[in-house]
Length: 111
Image (cartoon, rainbow, N blue to C red; front, side):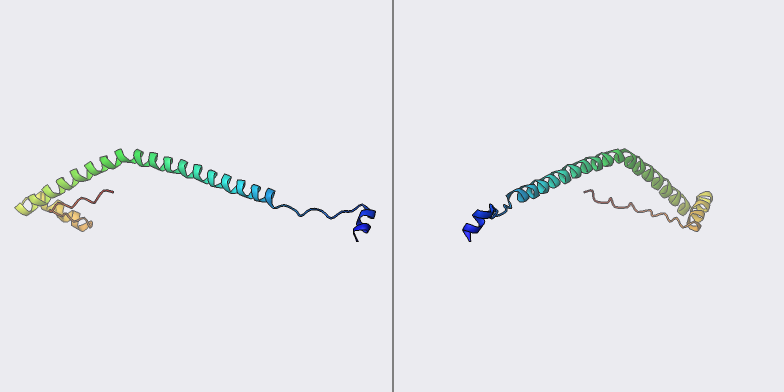
């Protein structure tokens, strides 16, 4: 049989190596992981910047809420002492579904 192969000039091909496909697969997996990591780092930075941009408006809103709560508590106090104008305001607020809690509200925990 070897004589026949030699006579025709055809020799069996060497076994195909899996080295090159594995290198390509490995490089593509590493490249994809690196791409995903850089994208996630960019998104993290954007979210951190957005959070920083929201801090000042949140502080302003908290100050405004505290001022309005203090005003409402003082109005409630006047109404309980018998002030007619304060009673009208408190009654109108109750009609609109706004209740005034004279007790201070606990601060939510910060993370």
